[in-house]
Image (cartoon, rainbow, N blue to C red; front, side):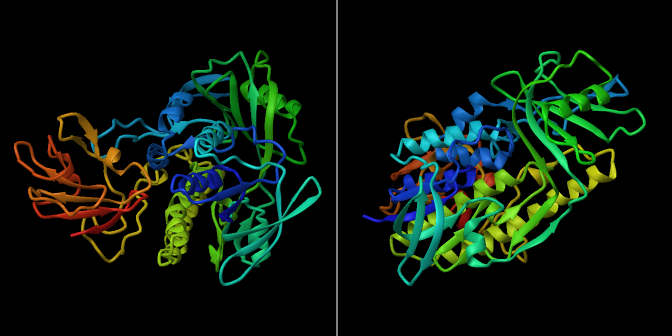
Length: 473
């Protein structure tokens, strides 16, 4: 059997997409031209909506166990401690929102968790395998792969380029990557160890006269390393010696010794959006479709949700229903454009030295992402995120709506229905306590489900496989 979907690129986007396909029994092949797995922190902030995606994909427990909450940052100006602050104020979970806060985990460790989950479905990343060329026709894509100097020709129904900002797939398609690159501003990012700082906290070191110009060090879980971020001045090279010089200069201390530089990169403001996300049977996702400033922690999260959106639609297409494929671009390109605006505005604040440049609000959490018709002013409509709610099952055991949604299926909820339901899988009546229902049902013990869904008796809600409302009537 041919692999129905070929994915070029095994970062978070490609892995999320491969998982979505594999759990639907769609034959998938995921390749990456790198010869070894990425080993740095890079995108270390997992937003609340992505945590909900991870709940559905079956990796939430591993992600929560490996990561840490966003740390308190200790600020030092001119070597003097001036106070503590958070980029995000912690929020208590609610019935509708079980994961309200940012979670910190180095990207390489997130990728490892996704790879382990993917392996449970018998799919493994093929390293050292590059996509050289491809052509497409009415029934599929023919691609040439190279590995160790050997060429292989493969056939797939669809190809997805999740191969980063320099995407081979996007360039081969001739799709414009619209936006700007600012060569005048360079930032140094890296993972380093230091034992002189309390690893429970993050740090901001800056001069007393220019408090917004300095270096940030954020603790990474699972060891003694910090992610280091600093403006790279002049033609300085990204070396451990340069990092050490920055720490000495901005902290005013001589006891902070940096070691174990395990990952480093020079970042330039590169804000770009692909002109289109689809060309026939070929799709773009993640950084291949949109690249973001690191401000706001949006890039990795947006890419993961690209894969989450595209996966169930490709699975439907493989099984004969291609009607959903056009919605991938219309939904995700609109989201990417909006998220790029959020990231860019935060970057502008940082460059301008605004006092609130380090603060983050709900606009970065991606919980308000919606595919709704903007002219529809009702509180919950087609395209909105489906809220969670605590329930009890027919045996009286605690259960959540997210438990019903979890898996590769759509879910239908009949509020207040007591008669037999249609004989369809993943269909439930949602009833109030004390109500006798003859069909498969769950009990809205505290009324949170009725409230969250603005439901009355007779309301019918269909939730898409990716946790958005398909219909509300």
